[in-house]
Image (tube, rainbow, N blue to C red; front, side, top):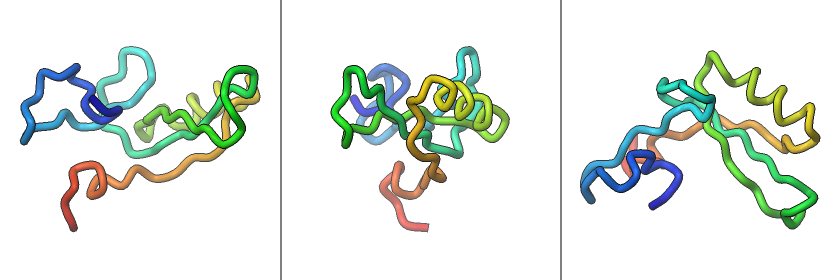
Length: 86
């Protein structure tokens, strides 16, 4: 299972769940990747990923920045996620 198979394996091989926002209780499609790491437990080059919708991007960035965990925010390339070309 990868971070984009958020259905917990319920989707079949040809069917993958759409990437959803990581904000608690939000089920909106993701448009952004927030890259972060916790320097207390992760090596400096490691990047964890939270996904964000337009509405929650700034909230999630602020949450990570306040704790010194945020590294970078990038647009989510849905073509790369689905494995198709646009």
